[in-house]
Image (tube, rainbow, N blue to C red; front, side, top):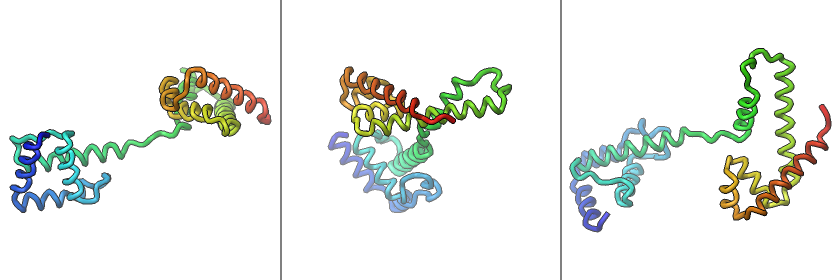
Length: 190
Protein backbone atom coordinates (compact mmCIF):
# COMPACT_ATOMS: atom_id res chain seq x y z
CA UNK A 1 0.00 0.00 0.00
CA UNK A 2 1.21 3.45 -0.79
CA UNK A 3 1.27 6.08 1.98
CA UNK A 4 -1.71 7.81 0.35
CA UNK A 5 -3.71 4.54 0.25
CA UNK A 6 -2.89 3.95 3.93
CA UNK A 7 -4.05 7.43 4.77
CA UNK A 8 -7.28 6.92 2.82
CA UNK A 9 -7.81 3.57 4.57
CA UNK A 10 -7.39 5.12 8.03
CA UNK A 11 -9.70 7.99 7.04
CA UNK A 12 -12.34 5.47 5.96
CA UNK A 13 -12.02 3.61 9.29
CA UNK A 14 -12.32 6.88 11.26
CA UNK A 15 -15.36 7.79 9.16
CA UNK A 16 -17.24 4.64 10.21
CA UNK A 17 -20.25 5.28 12.39
CA UNK A 18 -20.20 4.05 15.98
CA UNK A 19 -22.77 1.30 15.36
CA UNK A 20 -20.66 -0.24 12.61
CA UNK A 21 -17.49 -0.01 14.68
CA UNK A 22 -19.25 -1.56 17.68
CA UNK A 23 -20.71 -4.40 15.62
CA UNK A 24 -17.25 -5.20 14.23
CA UNK A 25 -15.68 -5.21 17.70
CA UNK A 26 -18.50 -7.46 18.94
CA UNK A 27 -17.97 -9.98 16.15
CA UNK A 28 -20.05 -13.07 16.85
CA UNK A 29 -18.51 -15.12 19.65
CA UNK A 30 -20.04 -18.19 18.04
CA UNK A 31 -18.05 -17.54 14.85
CA UNK A 32 -14.86 -17.14 16.89
CA UNK A 33 -15.20 -20.60 18.47
CA UNK A 34 -12.44 -22.92 17.34
CA UNK A 35 -10.18 -20.08 16.22
CA UNK A 36 -7.22 -18.48 17.94
CA UNK A 37 -9.01 -15.15 18.32
CA UNK A 38 -10.44 -14.27 21.73
CA UNK A 39 -12.48 -11.24 20.70
CA UNK A 40 -13.81 -9.36 17.73
CA UNK A 41 -11.37 -6.55 18.50
CA UNK A 42 -8.40 -8.90 18.04
CA UNK A 43 -9.88 -10.11 14.78
CA UNK A 44 -10.56 -6.55 13.59
CA UNK A 45 -6.94 -5.61 14.29
CA UNK A 46 -5.79 -8.68 12.35
CA UNK A 47 -7.93 -7.65 9.37
CA UNK A 48 -6.55 -4.12 9.47
CA UNK A 49 -2.97 -5.44 9.74
CA UNK A 50 -3.50 -7.64 6.70
CA UNK A 51 -4.77 -4.73 4.64
CA UNK A 52 -1.85 -2.54 5.73
CA UNK A 53 0.70 -5.28 5.02
CA UNK A 54 -0.74 -5.77 1.55
CA UNK A 55 -1.77 -9.39 2.05
CA UNK A 56 -5.42 -8.35 1.65
CA UNK A 57 -6.45 -5.82 -0.98
CA UNK A 58 -8.78 -3.02 0.10
CA UNK A 59 -11.86 -2.88 -2.10
CA UNK A 60 -12.76 0.84 -2.12
CA UNK A 61 -16.05 0.14 -3.90
CA UNK A 62 -17.35 -1.77 -0.86
CA UNK A 63 -18.34 0.21 2.26
CA UNK A 64 -15.51 -0.02 4.81
CA UNK A 65 -17.67 -1.72 7.45
CA UNK A 66 -18.83 -4.41 5.05
CA UNK A 67 -15.31 -4.87 3.71
CA UNK A 68 -13.81 -5.31 7.20
CA UNK A 69 -16.63 -7.66 8.23
CA UNK A 70 -16.01 -9.89 5.21
CA UNK A 71 -12.25 -9.79 5.80
CA UNK A 72 -12.78 -10.79 9.45
CA UNK A 73 -15.17 -13.58 8.47
CA UNK A 74 -12.67 -14.91 5.94
CA UNK A 75 -9.75 -14.76 8.39
CA UNK A 76 -11.60 -16.65 11.12
CA UNK A 77 -12.90 -19.22 8.63
CA UNK A 78 -9.39 -20.01 7.36
CA UNK A 79 -8.01 -20.04 10.91
CA UNK A 80 -10.65 -22.52 12.12
CA UNK A 81 -10.11 -24.75 9.08
CA UNK A 82 -6.32 -24.74 9.57
CA UNK A 83 -6.65 -25.50 13.28
CA UNK A 84 -8.80 -28.55 12.50
CA UNK A 85 -5.96 -30.07 10.50
CA UNK A 86 -4.02 -32.41 12.71
CA UNK A 87 -0.61 -33.84 12.06
CA UNK A 88 -0.67 -37.58 11.73
CA UNK A 89 1.97 -39.29 13.87
CA UNK A 90 4.63 -41.16 11.90
CA UNK A 91 3.64 -44.46 13.53
CA UNK A 92 0.22 -44.28 11.86
CA UNK A 93 1.85 -43.50 8.51
CA UNK A 94 4.23 -46.45 8.85
CA UNK A 95 1.36 -48.77 9.74
CA UNK A 96 -0.68 -47.51 6.79
CA UNK A 97 2.25 -48.10 4.45
CA UNK A 98 2.70 -51.61 5.79
CA UNK A 99 -1.01 -52.32 5.47
CA UNK A 100 -1.06 -50.95 1.92
CA UNK A 101 1.87 -53.13 0.96
CA UNK A 102 0.31 -56.18 2.58
CA UNK A 103 -3.18 -55.50 1.21
CA UNK A 104 -4.27 -58.11 -1.23
CA UNK A 105 -7.55 -59.08 -2.81
CA UNK A 106 -7.65 -62.03 -0.44
CA UNK A 107 -7.19 -59.80 2.64
CA UNK A 108 -10.39 -61.05 4.19
CA UNK A 109 -9.30 -64.63 3.73
CA UNK A 110 -6.32 -64.19 6.07
CA UNK A 111 -6.44 -66.37 9.10
CA UNK A 112 -6.15 -64.91 12.59
CA UNK A 113 -2.68 -66.48 12.81
CA UNK A 114 -1.57 -64.67 9.63
CA UNK A 115 -2.95 -61.40 10.95
CA UNK A 116 -1.14 -61.89 14.27
CA UNK A 117 2.08 -62.69 12.44
CA UNK A 118 1.78 -59.53 10.34
CA UNK A 119 1.23 -57.44 13.48
CA UNK A 120 4.25 -59.05 15.14
CA UNK A 121 6.39 -58.25 12.09
CA UNK A 122 5.29 -54.62 12.27
CA UNK A 123 6.17 -54.51 15.95
CA UNK A 124 9.59 -56.01 15.24
CA UNK A 125 10.26 -53.36 12.57
CA UNK A 126 9.23 -50.61 14.99
CA UNK A 127 11.48 -52.00 17.73
CA UNK A 128 14.43 -52.36 15.35
CA UNK A 129 14.05 -48.74 14.19
CA UNK A 130 13.78 -47.52 17.79
CA UNK A 131 16.88 -49.53 18.74
CA UNK A 132 18.78 -48.16 15.74
CA UNK A 133 17.82 -44.62 16.69
CA UNK A 134 18.91 -45.21 20.30
CA UNK A 135 22.17 -46.83 19.16
CA UNK A 136 22.97 -43.77 17.07
CA UNK A 137 22.02 -41.19 19.71
CA UNK A 138 25.55 -39.74 19.60
CA UNK A 139 25.58 -39.47 15.78
CA UNK A 140 24.16 -36.05 14.83
CA UNK A 141 24.13 -36.77 11.08
CA UNK A 142 22.29 -40.08 11.54
CA UNK A 143 19.77 -38.44 13.87
CA UNK A 144 19.21 -35.70 11.29
CA UNK A 145 18.60 -38.28 8.57
CA UNK A 146 16.26 -40.31 10.81
CA UNK A 147 14.38 -37.14 11.72
CA UNK A 148 14.04 -36.23 8.05
CA UNK A 149 12.81 -39.71 7.16
CA UNK A 150 10.32 -39.57 10.04
CA UNK A 151 9.00 -36.27 8.66
CA UNK A 152 8.68 -37.77 5.18
CA UNK A 153 11.33 -35.56 3.61
CA UNK A 154 13.10 -36.40 0.38
CA UNK A 155 16.89 -36.98 0.51
CA UNK A 156 17.62 -33.60 -1.08
CA UNK A 157 15.38 -31.89 1.48
CA UNK A 158 17.12 -33.69 4.35
CA UNK A 159 20.54 -32.69 3.04
CA UNK A 160 19.46 -29.06 2.61
CA UNK A 161 17.68 -28.81 5.96
CA UNK A 162 20.63 -30.21 7.91
CA UNK A 163 23.47 -28.90 5.72
CA UNK A 164 24.65 -32.41 4.87
CA UNK A 165 26.77 -33.13 1.83
CA UNK A 166 26.03 -36.11 -0.42
CA UNK A 167 28.84 -38.14 1.16
CA UNK A 168 27.78 -37.31 4.74
CA UNK A 169 24.18 -38.23 3.90
CA UNK A 170 25.12 -41.58 2.32
CA UNK A 171 27.47 -42.35 5.18
CA UNK A 172 24.75 -41.63 7.75
CA UNK A 173 22.29 -43.84 5.83
CA UNK A 174 24.89 -46.64 5.86
CA UNK A 175 25.39 -46.31 9.63
CA UNK A 176 21.61 -46.40 10.13
CA UNK A 177 21.32 -49.59 8.05
CA UNK A 178 24.24 -51.18 9.91
CA UNK A 179 22.75 -50.28 13.29
CA UNK A 180 19.35 -51.63 12.21
CA UNK A 181 20.97 -54.95 11.19
CA UNK A 182 22.82 -55.07 14.50
CA UNK A 183 19.61 -54.31 16.43
CA UNK A 184 17.69 -56.92 14.43
CA UNK A 185 20.38 -59.54 15.17
CA UNK A 186 20.46 -58.84 18.91
CA UNK A 187 16.71 -58.96 19.27
CA UNK A 188 15.51 -61.96 21.31
CA UNK A 189 13.26 -64.38 19.42
CA UNK A 190 9.53 -64.40 20.16
